[in-house]
Image (cartoon, rainbow, N blue to C red; front, top):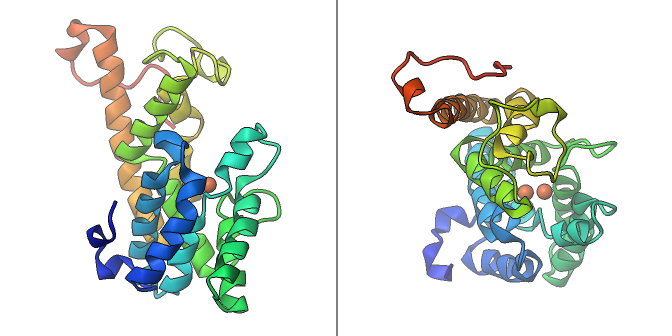
Length: 241
Ligand SMILES: [Fe+2]
Ligand SMILES: [Fe+2]
């Protein structure tokens, strides 16, 4: 993406500084593929600013945090989960923001958003901006984008297209050929709407959730064969909720 492709509206820190942050973040996103690469970051950035505007959040902090939130991801991947990408990302973000002469309080607030965006252990989002970044990041793992990302991931692990029909989905192992997009939906994506931290995040998540249910119900019917496409819409085999 070029500098000109971003509107001023998308750059609360100003186009120049926003571009500098993107340039700092880009090398960390290289080779992260379709699930966690720069496109994910840009979507999270847009969603975070949308929620932030509605809630009167500090958009400068939110913008910097969103652009840098996953820069620790490659370290977590390389160490097979022994490093937490949110904590590593917060550490790296501090270094970047110091180099770019941001004020210490701004750096602390931004680093908190990044370290808490996974919402695990003692890293609970304390500030409005941290809650918004958390919601924006989770929203990108559901809805049409979430489905697309789930299939990309399943493709990378060599999983089947779909398997609700013929296996106990909850007993299937991760990283196996049964680690399908549908398994991800049942295990994770279907639960996200209940974990949102902001009203707008919740609203968007409910809407994206409904779309996923429709999609997987349709996928189930199509994989059963042409006959099932003429019947009334049934519930998916392993039920909802
Ligand atoms: Fe992340
Ligand atoms: Fe993310």
